[in-house]
Image (cartoon, rainbow, N blue to C red; front, top):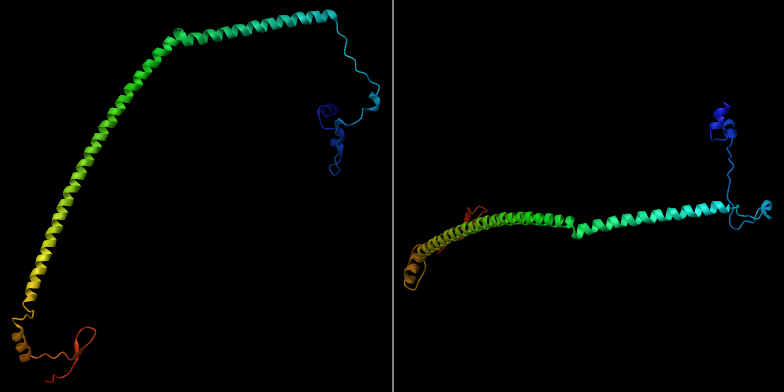
Length: 208
């Protein structure tokens, strides 16, 4: 049990305390910049650790060797990158890239020409269909206009015939005396009343 408690990070007091008690943990804080120096460190003077001269010489030599190795590696990597860049720009890699770009350009131009031809054919077909539709619409409009004109002429002819029939009953200076005599010989009584349906409901006797 003691080994289990030693492996646990929770304080033993917290584990053994009853559940109903208030748990209080100590928290270690840090001093601020304005806090004074502790009394136990008032006379403390920090001195650097002693350095072995022989060890310092060895460390300087090793550091110099380390710096030279890293510099050589950086120069080697830089030379490789510059050589690769040069080959890509003016070397065999550039030539292969130029050939590949030219081939890609030719294939794209062929694809573009084929697409332009397809669009041209579609446009020609669409324009032809639109022209045929416009011509058909024009013919239909002409036929409709001709029918409307014929109907208009027939209507006017009918109105003229109707007026000619009605003109027979018109009173003119030539038949004025005749119409007066006919009216005197055949008197008509218009003194009557009609309902909403137009039927005569009351008539007054005619008086001469």
